[in-house]
Length: 191
Image (tube, rainbow, N blue to C red; front, side, top):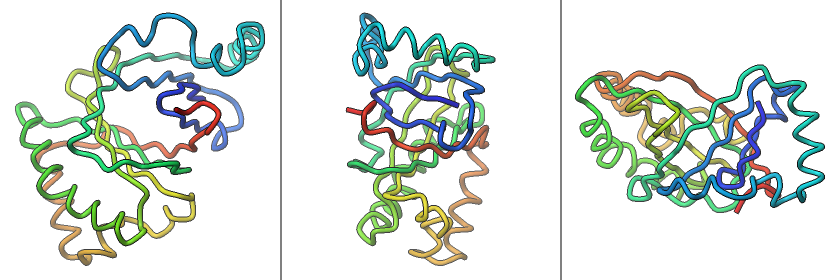
């Protein structure tokens, strides 16, 4: 999977040798961000971007474009984090507001403690829009290095296994996980 979008700046090409899926992830409120030059053209120039796109096209089996709207009120800035674990979450019918309140009141305080303790670099929540399944959202935990992922769920280290299990159990009454991705931030494609 190759994610060349400048806004997200993460790509999983380091995880997989060849692009199986090309995903352009753009976070923002306006569609106008999709006008004009692509992130690759801005970073490489028009000719070099065209050559790269031709090479990538040979590896692409499917392509998906969708809009993300970041909820800054539910996140913690991640700075220059290297690694990210993103879960695509689908709230149960009629439960999206309740799930977002769960993140705000139950998850975010734990994630703030995790950042203060150096367990994570940041946390973001984004609503998926046009091009994605209606109502899906993403939660992304950012890490300074991939080795930090080996420690497991940061909530366990901060609130204990019993409380972390209760936190997860509450989430399962509100939403289901659809997909989990681990990605690397590419500084040259990020802003």
